[in-house]
Image (cartoon, rainbow, N blue to C red; front, side, top):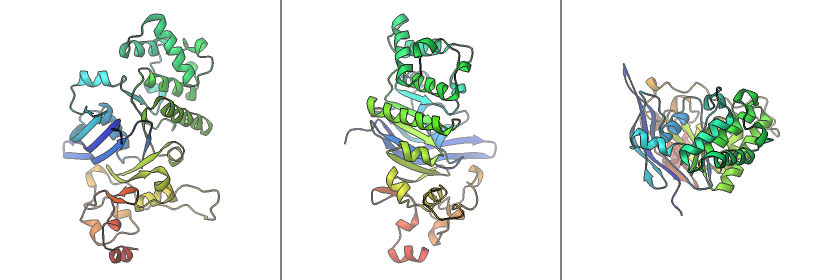
Length: 330
């Protein structure tokens, strides 16, 4: 296999505080290949966005990378000084945020923001940079791009602004795009358009995309593989078809069971009891065990590691014990 565009190994993110250091991302490892969309899913507070921020070097202080490695096309980037990371961010790694208004300066025209980004990260200047900006807006599906390029952000709808943000992320032809909840604030029809856009760009440009979301519909439609995160750890990772169709971890089973299905006769959706633990009170052993319907002896005091199970990997004692013990747990 070719070398992955993004390789994360044993990533740990800590947040120092007055009452001790909190571990927000704990021993996370995954790869994203060229032309692949990896979906990262989980409840709010699972560590999805922090993982993305650590990769792109935008952790809010006092958050810090406390361990592990992040490699982009084989070269380690997690230990780079801020100036070196700034050159990579925008040029080799693009970012699409949840709210386009946080990515666009309301005081500047779209043309100024795009042309500046292109000039900073490429050799294009002047008229050439403007032509490239128009081409990017056309590529992401902005109607009448040549006429609208000099508009301000407030003159666009939410969906159109998100297309502009995607164009900004693509301005320097990056190898990796991290999309953090790119469709949350959009209506369903516009969500579908943005998903189709990301998939097409991934396929045509051969980029790698890390798609962070809590929306299982987005993952099912866009991702080739998916990672399920809980309390700062990956509890299951595999092909999107396998994880959605035949989830292994009880948390993944609960997430899939909470999705409404048109062909189901169930009167009520599956509910996962309890809530995500706070960083100050993550339980020992498997962090999901207080909420797990299949909890048994080792879960409360021993932490399971990701282990291969078929084509997927899962961190659950149900798949690391003898068949008799697993049957007893059921």
